[in-house]
Image (cartoon, rainbow, N blue to C red; front, side, top):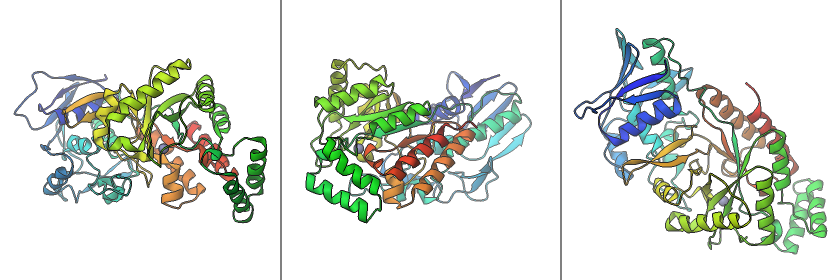
Length: 452
Ligand SMILES: [Zn+2]
């Protein structure tokens, strides 16, 4: 038995959340009971002779206004419940509510609006309204960060709660959140492929001296000088990355710009023979090429179509044809209204939605999920593959160590064994210059590919 019949109030946001939690994350087959009950307020899931009810709460706003709606509905001080040994906030009900459910014969009543809470997180509405100097939502205002639980995949654990409830009312039900997983994805945004493009000889010599005297890394210091003599480049770590990924039988993704004139954008241009050779090499080695949306795209989403088409057409002229194209915004400059632009441009997936300055589940899930467009109140074809960890966030923003980075990766990996999904990492080529960073990268791949 793997099919659930669903009775759901006729509200697109709710229907989306039910579809994502029950079908995409839990992995159950679903049948929508028709006609949908317009006056009903509970979602009812029927499996065999048993059923589960979930209360709902109408959420009509978006953006800053939704936070007032959340406040009014006591979303700011949720009671907590334990799901598979993890503390999870039960948004939408007051402290003192009986959690997670009450039982009446073959029916379990889950006592908080689980699907509405899931919608808030999955649709990107858990972000706060303040922005940083790059126009990115300040992560400290994120709903999960405020409750100190951004390392908890709340939506995935809600799916686990449904799984556990199904086991009670329909023993032997087959769907399992843990079984619904994909291999880890290690991504590399190509911002600075080569050092000599952005710095002169004098600067590189100064850095070499700093490597020797400050970093006490003679290998890198002399490597820098040697690379200048040989006209190679220390930031050109692509062969190392590919060889490492291939050793662990992992496919990597490399995201390239298709335009951009902002001072913080890449300096390379498609058509540069070295870039074209790099594109061809990565493709021939079996890795995935992706699109890196330039800095200005956040303010001018029309650029996404232009830049992506330019990149894809250029790759096709080089003989590189891919069935799927995904990618990410430079600097993780993303808002929920970027999703429709990616969808219209014909991209298959985006992987921008992670925290720029911390590790965790910004959408409350580690599962790739189709996205919801608030403007048109519908589900798009575009899939979001949530970014869970970026090396810059750990090493630069948090000023944590490489060892701490590995601890986080291990935690994400262990979590994925419980709640499925996909561990997605971002590590830039120009941050694999130091030997210790490369050793850590290898150790990370070992953790990610370890058999449970
Ligand atoms: Zn970038």
